Amino acid sequence: VDHLWTFRGPTADRFKRVFPNGCLELIVSFEGAYRVEGFSLETAAVSGLSAGPLVVEQPPAQDVMAARLTPAGARALLGVPMESLAHRHLALEDLVGASARELRERAAGLGVERRLHALAGWLRARLSPPPRDAASWMVEALVESRGCASIEALRLEAGFSKRRLLASFRERVGLTPK
Image (cartoon, rainbow, N blue to C red; front, side, top):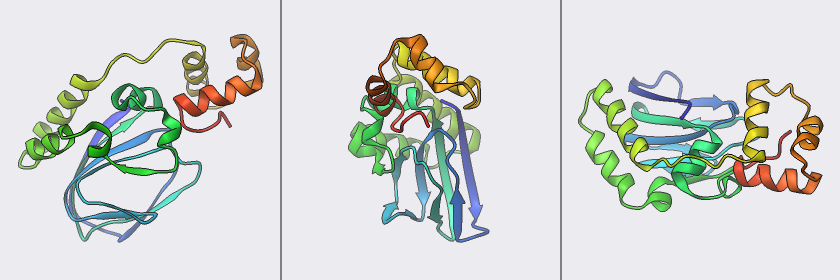
């Protein structure tokens, strides 16, 4: 988990441009619907990695909490290959079942601090440690270098073919290393 956040209040701008940040967003809305790329978020959803910016239409008033997840964290939480989430927005309940609805109901009436504690506890109860392998090491190396590490040098050090490198990144991250 990269970080947790929450917002409650009036919307300043109806449309918001969200730039790629290397993380997936798990969002729980308590008031109003958000719309992005034809998807309407009315309760809880996960937005996968995207290579380009998104334009989000926000409700007039917002009451929302969210967790920004690293690809490894999202994979550990959701148990699906990250390529199945890339460039997509899915209802959280479709991925984790009724516990998504329970999380929303439990956090609905809480203040900010208690709401974030509820989200953190929900995440902690569901997260399993991500696998430690060469592909995970390569992702960590790219993150630590802020994208400046040579992908070719990392590929050679890991002993991956170009095809294996691309397949591993699609599964673990959802996108290719570039």
